[in-house]
Length: 394
Image (cartoon, rainbow, N blue to C red; front, side, top):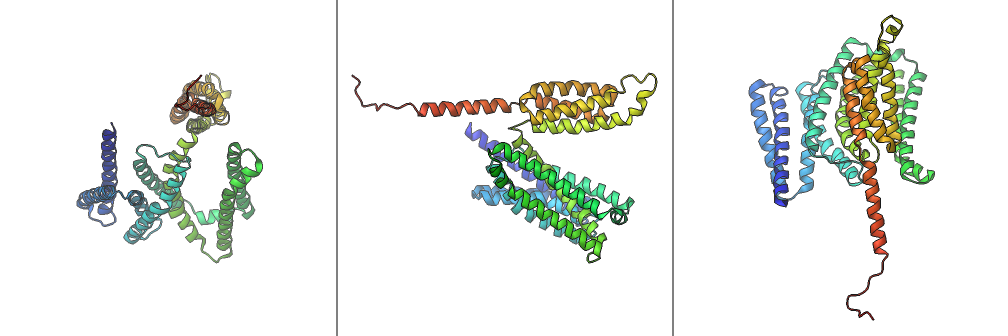
């Protein structure tokens, strides 16, 4: 059985490496180097063979750390090429190759260390297909983000729009967002640690990071408004690099963190449900003026069912012991949302159904109870004195 698991792990690793090398090499050969279909075929073949051979060599040498660095570095090449070669950045082939190299270094160092540290501290779960999901979801999300941001920069005058916003409004919004993030982080720490002082000490890193980010953003705003740094350049940096890279890195990594948090409370199901309720509520608001018309039928159902989906999704998140009732109720209201709100463009209803099923079938409480019972059993058994085997009873 152990040999079968080792062979399956090796096969899965080869498939992942071949897929990443094939897609990355095909894109590099076709677009940055400009060889079209011929370049895609040659580049894909060379990339698949090279990356697979290199990872197999490191596995044979048992250089596990080097193998992981290479795997993470290969994941980051394509997102960097997409960002550097985009029309927003405007650096062409040079930008694509430069950003691809920089992104590979970032993924092979910072991202690898982040995932490794959090997986050891049980804050991140390395699920099957982890590297393939990081590569595919990261590359696709970067590509879509670049298209959306590029479209918005073409139709909107972002420089004039930003200058029209009051400075105090920007400061208030940014401060409120960061305070909300810190409060959530602090409350999560408080549930883990007993005293408020201990929770505050454990959340000091988050507080320092958010304060540093606030200072950096306010300094950038001050420099641009005073004329020391062109606002147009700042917009292109944020729109062309910061936003795509943040989404392309944060979205695929969020799955591992959600799976880790899902052991304590049904986080994944609640997020699906909350996002789905947003679609349903949006459609419910759109049809709200029709409620006063004759024969409106079940038009009210969109807004009402969306609100109930949101309520039960939050209930399962903050009160995990109610997960079965909340999940069952979410499934019912998700089905009802198709009557009055077309299921929130169908997407909302499907997300609600998936979230309700995940919440109702969540077994985190059962795992916690079994774990506590095992600990109590081991403690009680260790407290029983043992009698040496060579003693003679009277």
